[in-house]
Image 1: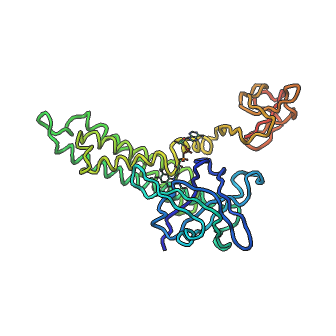
Image 2: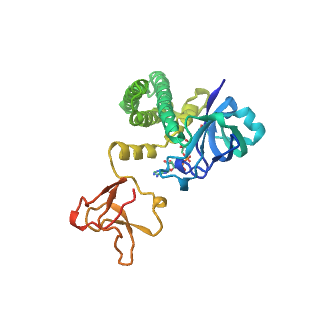
Image 3: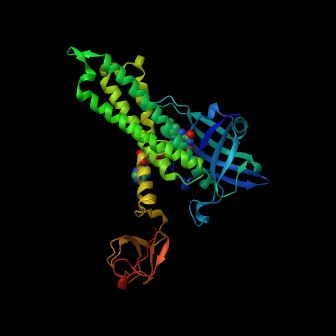
Length: 332
Ligand SMILES: Cc1cc2nc3c(=O)[nH]c(=O)nc-3n(C[C@H](O)[C@H](O)[C@H](O)COP(=O)(O)OP(=O)(O)OC[C@H]3O[C@@H](n4cnc5c(N)ncnc54)[C@H](O)[C@@H]3O)c2cc1C
């Protein structure tokens, strides 16, 4: 049995996973799936796929991460009953596809775990995937190091090996140090995962460090192969293209920065206007705490709740800036 495919990303919602539009509606002991996915890899090399779909509409859940479920989809069966798979030609020759679901029926027993908890399950799998991708990048990084060190020792220009020039040595040494450091974080993530400890931070940081290290190593490798770096025969240009992917997928660098800033450093979440109720306008706390909030614009242009200051979901009765003058309501 080949289970190597996971259907999460959608064309209209991208990284904002909780807004996915693919729905699975329960009907007579089955779930009926409608919607679209994009960039879903290894579909043609798998028998089964894990699919994330909304089972409760976003408007009906209290937390946006709720109301999504995961299903085991028998791909070959599904292709006969409402799933269309369209391959995407891409820069790295990776087998990845667009998927279209049209009234695809999935047996009820193919629901994995509890209905509505799918996002939580997926996140757990994504942390393992990020660690795995980190390992792949580290492998690529060492590959670049092996190739470039061998080449610069052999290649003679101006009567000596190019690797004798410190201008050539330093970027290579720099890349090697970064790969080794990323490797330590990768093992840290693995240890925590094996111990069933929370490891989201380490998984994300390992993926970030490894993707960056591998990219820099690829850059150095290409640079010091000179013109030969561009020749397909050496494989350097292919690996250089391939390793670029990991700045974007399975999670982009910006989203890792955002995770670290918010969840590790405790910085405020960047605002999501679509979550604000109607009639709410964004502004800073006029009482002086300096934080962005959403003041309920009453005719008096004052907050209707004069004593509430909500901060990351918790209500405080005082403003941290000037406790005496609180008059706004935050929505993050
Ligand atoms: C080859 C390949 C294979 C893939 N395989 C799979 C797969 O098997 N299954 C699957 O589900 N998905 C897969 N993906 C999808 C991949 O996970 C997404 O491409 C990735 O998460 C980025 O989402 P997006 O492409 O929709 O970019 P978008 O969400 O549109 O983002 C575009 C850019 O904007 C930036 N950005 C977006 N929002 C913010 C913000 N708030 N702050 C700062 N920057 C922001 C991002 O960092 C990114 O660089 C694959 C993608 C590729 C290219």
